[in-house]
Image 1 (cartoon, each protein chain N blue to C red):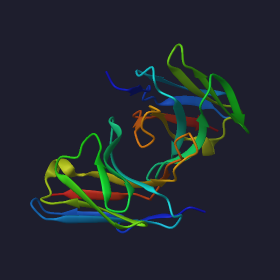
Image 2 (image 1 turned 180 degrees about the horizontal axis):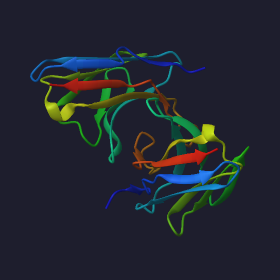
Image 3 (image 1 turned 180 degrees about the vertical axis):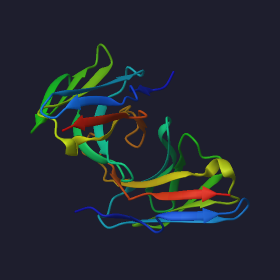
Length: 115
Length: 112
C-alpha cells in the first residue's frame, strides 16, 4: 500500500515563527502536493512538485515555500506564520499516469494552529 | 464562480436507501473526475474515478458523468452507517495533470 507520512499531526505555533511541515512517500511517486483544507472552502493547492528540485505554485502560494531535495520528501515552509494560516495541511502524492491523471494519495494531515 | 460546486449538506438518508451526491463544474475542458471520501478527522481516500460520459459501477458505488451538462454524480446503493462521511468531488482539467480542483464536499449521514 502507498504510504504518505506527515511528520506532525498537530502543531501550535506563535505568530512570526518559522514552521516546517514534512511529508514522505514510499511509492516512488513523481508528483507531490501540498493542500490546505478549510471549512467551506474545500482543498486548495498551495504548491506541487513534479520532480526533485522542481516546484510550481498552486492557487494560494503566498506566505509559503517548499523544498524537494529528494524524490520521496516534500517540505512545506511557512517563513513567518500568521493566524490566517491556521488550517489543516494535507500532503499528497501521485504517479504520472498513462494519459490520465494519477490518483492522489493523501497523508493523515497536519493541523496547524497559529496563535 | 467556483470551479467545482457541491451542496454542503448534510444529506441524511436511512440505512439501505440510495444516497445521491451531485457535483457541477465550470470548465468545459475538464477531462477527469474523481470522488473522494473523507471521514471526520481523516484524510481523503479515492472511491471512484470516471473519464467518459455514462455510468461506472464499482460495488455499491456508481459514478455518473454528463460532460454536456457539466455534471458528475455519485450514487451509493444500500447505504450503510459506515458510509457516513464527507464526499469530495475533484476535477482535473486535462491540460495539466497536476491541477485538481476540489469541491467543498457534501456531508452524508446514514441513519440506522
